Image (cartoon, rainbow, N blue to C red):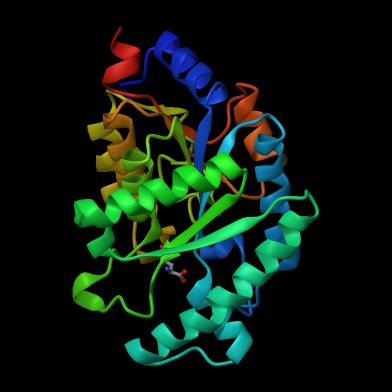
Length: 277
Ligand code: GLU
């Protein structure tokens, strides 16, 4: 990459991320299920352990969790062929997910709440205000809000479609200080890390965004793990003055590392607002 982000801008963004009082964490289906599409207890507990590290620092935590359709497939032992079947699988998987989150957070004496959103809820001011008020109340109570798209009622035309965009909309709408997108790759790379051994992790994205976008357009395909939407979501958030990080969910103590200012994954530095001062 010819263009890189200035070291002091990276340093400042890393400090902002470490000092965040309110963090939204997005976990993808791969970070929660195994190869047979069963909810993976170890993965889920690891995610909750990481979130508990933030809670122990008095950081407010909002989780956006995928995995409803994925976990539903394992639970029903059927992959689903139609949209209706995927929607039905999501309802089986969602309740199973929430049961496991409830149990896992109980290890830390924490309660959880489920919020299922549709595109309408993001677009309609009254509905979004109600959503935001509910989140504020839950956070005041120390309850961890867990958000997913309401897949059962979201048909093709009105789907948000993926939780990367859902997370960035919520991150901006409820004024978080940091978005962390956890996935099965260690960040954004100069190629597809699953296929190309020479692909290198990009430490930070800011002024070099166009170049990063060009690399992704070139190297990505459907097997690239949906990196485009993760980058797009992180970019949108950073345009609102909020730092964002894309990191590997299996990285040990990944959120604790971020909270202590370590270099993890790919950091999107805020490109307006706070760091412009
Ligand atoms: N809402 C979908 C689910 O929970 C996931 C969407 C996504 O993976 O981004 O299965």
